[in-house]
Amino acid sequence: PKNELIAALRRDETCLGLWVGSASATVAEIAALAGFDWVVLDGEHGPNDITSLRDQLRVLQGHVPVAVRVVTGADWMIKQVLDLGFQTVLVPMVETGAQAHDLAQAMRYAPQGRRGVGAMVARVSGYGADTTYMANANEEVALMVQVESARAIENIDAIANTEGVDAVFIGPADLATDMGHVGGYGPEAMHPDVMAAMTHAAARIRAAGKPVGIFAGNTDQIAPFAALGARFIAVGSDVILMREAFASRAALARAS
Ligand code: 3PY
Image 1 (tube, helix red, strand yellow):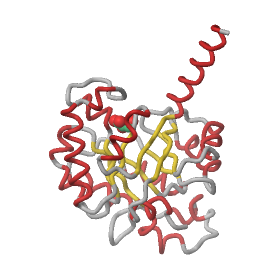
Image 2: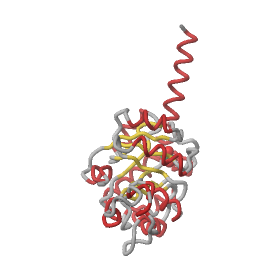
Image 3: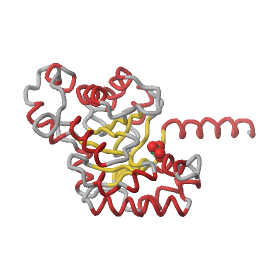
């Protein structure tokens, strides 16, 4: 199938998404129906394994485009999520062009890369029912790399211009923390030094012709982060939203 998410980003459309880190298929199912343009399943910080990712993908597919954030860009991990049927893979903590190039190779079959063959018996091909899968896979998978350290910002041109990198995602929390503004989901991410680094990175990513992604840790950050030129914007996280809703209901009930 066509990767509708990367196609929309290449048309420069704004795509608003939800971060799902609870590793719960029920939460994923609720997210599927909530009206977002995409959902990302967080395998880096959420307590996911390959079977929890599969179960969440099953309830999301057909409703909303899904991306997965892997723990690291190791070949075996990328292979497993692609064989499950994820098309868009977000890899955290990418700091150099060489790393980005290596990840691009892991995502695609030869001659563009070195992805292992096995998808023809995996979920992504209907367990072999879709014999056309391999012919189109290299065009329909999308690699998003996350830049979230001062070193990554220094190397932004090399990373963004790497062939096979389809989008670059700025991680404000990690970037702010790496720059000495620890935490990163609140005002730390809006510190002028962090904003300057993100403004520079976003401009360079767009100059390379690649879509810019970003995570807004709270609603105050959505507009300023969009103004950087970001189009792939996570506007909330299931865990944070549930905590806020639970705490506010408990407080309201006590006050009633
Ligand atoms: C960051 O903000 O550092 C992220 O990786 C998204 O939560």
